[in-house]
Image 1 (cartoon, helix red, strand yellow):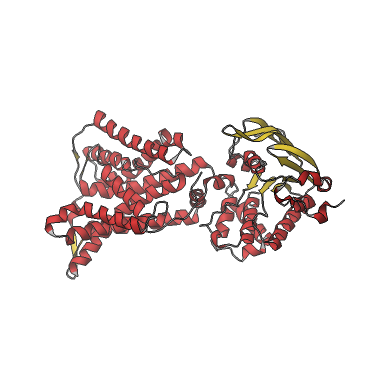
Image 2: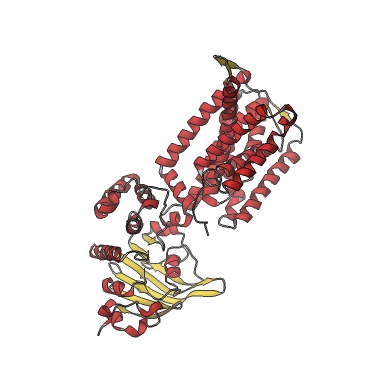
Length: 295
Length: 243
């Protein structure tokens, strides 16, 4: 029981980060049908920002806001340089473009920075724990869960209450109809990328705090987790993306602690088998979005 | 107000609209009728900026607006109630209306919401219902209300009565009549030619992408020869088409 409680908190902490990544991917998919395999690049770039800021002698109080700013800037730049040219193209064209962006960004860091690992200090409090009864809780997990909850609440408020949020939801459902209502496609697409940049930036802070290092290919794992979580939740559903992230985080932690020692190393493989089973029984993911394909 | 001059629109090598010209003056209700596949929807979608013409011009008060993006056209006062309504089904009725007023400043948006609430009693009762749960008639009223939110100078409607029960078709045509008495300018595509000619000041008949006839509603209603090619031959009700 004690162990289960600890696993759940640990899983929710991990899942929160996945949820933030998945939500950014889902927002962009909703608006332009782009499954963004370059989403992890926001983490890669953030990692180098963290390294450089840290090397300049500044602490995480500086790194954190800068990471969010740079993540938003990078998301907008990628949209401007790459994705705006394939707007409205076939889904497959956009998918390939996102792979292209992924490899180009990775190559730029290999060529002009370094292939080697760059280290920076984790915040000192990250390993702190406290006890509630018999349960030992990591401060870091609590911080991640609380900040994620606040971020999701703020995102929900923006989507529900603001004209930008309404336009985004309308465009996600029927882009042409939204344009007919006067919604500017430029503004709504850039807004979606900016929002995904904010979410990825906050995820990046936590990801990097825990990792304490970065490499040119550091974005691949978070990107895969985000895409998987978005797929589990049902691509295109924002609630599904959050749910998918939490489910993925919980599944990983629970499996790792429950699987027999001999195969605990195969956790990721088991997770994929479970995902395959999910798609056999629910091909649309946990929350199915029934809506006509955009033409 | 609106002048279309020699408009040709192609899908690949097929011309859906061929050299069509028509005009709509301020305060007029103009019908655009014709059989399936005549190019009516293509024509409206091109005027609204969703499609680009291969040749020809669209002018609004003399200004060339050919190929403008839909959001820009809406700001100039050209609104379209698209075919199949295309409501945002996940959004509530009031949210749909708000998106319709995306181009207005916040205060005017609230004024328009009040205005629409007065005009569409049915919708006011469903304010916070997701649009996906509305009945066909309610949904069509919302589609028209949503387009009115931007205070368009020219409102185009694509098949507003399609798929509605007869009693609801009456509601739609009453609404068109009501908008006409308010002095609004309408360009309406309809398959229900008889009803359309009844409410229209003038009408154009499109067939196979080309203009087949034009005239006042009453004139066209008498020319039963025009309608023989319509699907099922029932486009003009006998009570209206009689000599």
